[in-house]
Length: 313
Image (cartoon, rainbow, N blue to C red):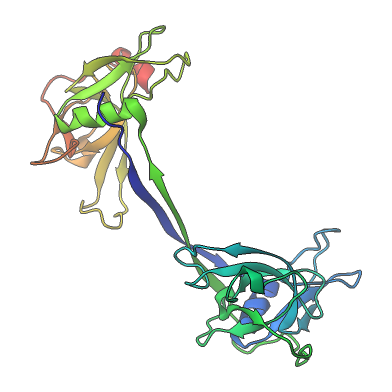
């Protein structure tokens, strides 16, 4: 059995959102070195502020400034900071109840080690040198043994408020395709398509999953399929993807390889996009050194009859 493959993968995209009046004031305040909370109907001050009372669900807009000093309510030591975290050296994640607030704010505490951190310790905000209207305008918290700071009495009104933010969402993980798909990928490198047959329903699944999605039984019998196939359905892509060197419009379709019980997807080329159709017979096109088909092109055969592929739509 070949060694099971694994590879690091990254899913990353920018998340853009607009801000309501409460979040706008909070982030604009951080830009201007002011920490704002919101006061509920029963007198509690929530920091970070929210637009609806978590207890009564009533809308709340009454902004109030709190101090940049506070008390650690709980903490955890971070031995190995990751990319994008507030500090590059080991630090503590802390919940800090700022003076004047009734809830705690999560952020980083710059401390020399876990022995220097304790619940109940006093801390203050360390402001970032460059502030843009984001939670990162608080660079971190730092230990503080002085008197509680006094709010400036800011009203929460700003001449140039922050109205939107762009947050980078990213997920780093290691993916292993498992035994069945490892064999499938290895066969692709030899320009073959290999699926696995269910011992019960006898369908051949490509790519194989190691188990039949219909019967739930483990699969192990390998079956070579294709190389030709039939377009079962398709779409025309009109938006150019980042880092993909393919001119639009182009066609992406589901292709039922001969002998397979499941359609796989692939790009369809070698034909004008407006001439691609259901039932079109296609074959894979491999590039020099490619580990999988670059695209599928028409074989010149007559179109497949609908009855032969309708179950694979």
